[in-house]
Image (cartoon, rainbow, N blue to C red):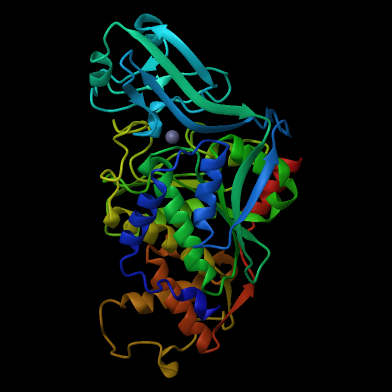
Length: 453
Ligand code: ZN
């Protein structure tokens, strides 16, 4: 058992502030599923983590999908007949429907309106719209802005390009003692949106930074990928790596005021599902565990039946259930340093649990070993109850028959993982216990066997 893995914290003072600062730095960039904004975002992360920028050419077949043309945009506006920009990409990149084809036309208001999107129920907010897989164009604006548009002839310009190019993604691989991997995946294809995409990017980047500075049992692979097509492309082009993935987390929506939500993997009982449930249950904050469903973020791809990886998702308020979702109100005020920190801590605790979840063998299995003579038992006779420490040792000794991991013992005993782990460490020091294999859980391997057959 490596003691380094038990070190659950580095100096994380002000990590919430640092996370928020990174979000603020990345906020103005016009990202999409391809293009320079995405590359600029990935390059900005290179200063934090050892990131490799990978590029997949347009037209590459990835399972049932094809890598699309690359989209780039320099400017976009709608000008009235007095030459005033009444809708201006320069004031918010949400004003243009993401992936709009180039346009340079004059038109009357009625025709223009067929290309405009607003949120009548939230008249001050700009919606976020995309048209990735249908060549089209449009502008998004607030309802109040729309109401100010008069009958006029408008000059409509979208100075974009949609051409053969590349789909970019970032990959940060941290070699551990074992080839077995934990993947952490986050989408990074949304323009100015803080909770949906930037909070996940920031938490993943700082987790990678933190893990890169300490010894690791597992190897880690962090993926900063455009949603859907990025995950599909990565899985299609890295099929030989899939069998090494033991656990995975999709991170997104980690900065809002809502409680933490962990969405289970398709398997539902994977070690990551149980680890996340335990960490959230023992944390002081309110939380909710969600069952898997085939809707959401990139867990859809990682948990598709032919891939079936034990990948869960950590978020705060689930996407689509808060009004700010996919609007200009998902801004810097919507994400909070203390919530980002809480999310970061929860991720780290889940990973720390996985790092330490070994399976042990009781070396003195015939009746209980005498703990008192080894200084392991509070030797005040007659007490009605054993303390948590003693109970943890008794559980570890009893269930360490090579078939129960520390997490199994934790769940069976209803004692915190940390107490169980400490008991195992103490027993190991006294020669009463030894780790019986690198890692007990055989479940991911089983799942891959099933996938293959
Ligand atoms: Zn989104």
